[in-house]
Image (cartoon, rainbow, N blue to C red; front, side, top):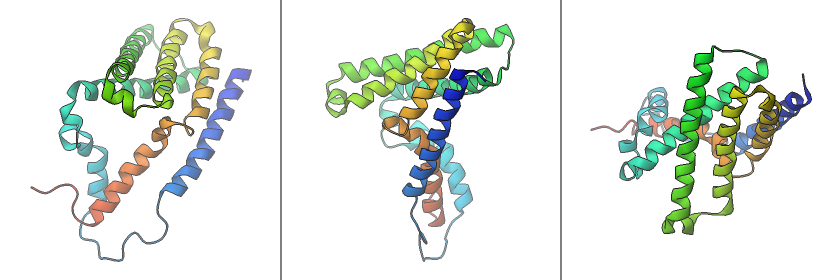
Length: 204
């Protein structure tokens, strides 16, 4: 492997270890409840990871449909970029058509991120609640998407993409990007917590 690949791998291992530690600290220890179970926890976990994420199931997302759509597009691009990072790291080649479609989707996702950043900057209420990490995290991830698209079109940029991705891995546990660590585990815990009590999924 090349130097940038070793750097990326080392950063990923740091992320994996720190993620394992943070998750172990986040989950409660011991019995969650001494009461008898009244619901289907597995069904509630599935609900938590699927239907509960729809905008009309969330507290305020339905009030901001444009931001919701932008957020979905942005995060979908991040998932696509991580998939590409793995493929490029493993040296997997895909047909030119897939490359072109991926670049277009990454560009669209990057525009979604940029739009969210502009909204944060130009909206007084959001500026009030924002801190430097909110801006830096957006810029870092949007740069990740952009550099991924460039590396697909121009392979000499791949080492730079690896180094940049490694820096992103190191930053994830430090700032607001740590929600990438907690998201799935939190949704699972919510499903277990409310499903066991028989109150999730919501009953009509």
